[in-house]
Length: 75
Image (cartoon, rainbow, N blue to C red):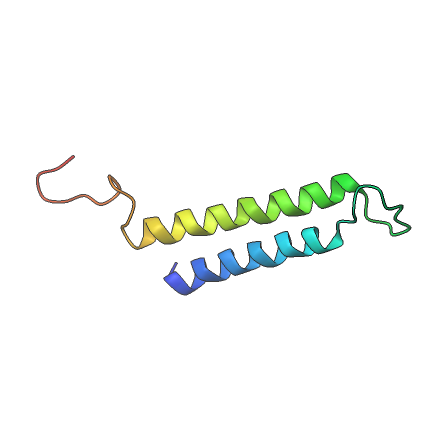
C-alpha cells in the first residue's frame, strides 16, 4: 500500500472518532436520540484504533519504526 492509502485510513479514523464525539451529549442531559452511551464509546474507540492502525502502517511503510528496516549487517 502506498502512503496515500495509509493517510486515508488515518483520516477515516478521525472522521469516525469525531462523529462519535459530536454525537455525545453532556452527562446530565436527557437525550431522545437513538444513540446510546456505549454506541458513542464504540465509535470513538473504533476511530482511535483506526487512526493508530493508519499511523503505525504509515510509519512502518516509510521505514520510520526502528528495527523494521533491514540494513546491511544489522539484525
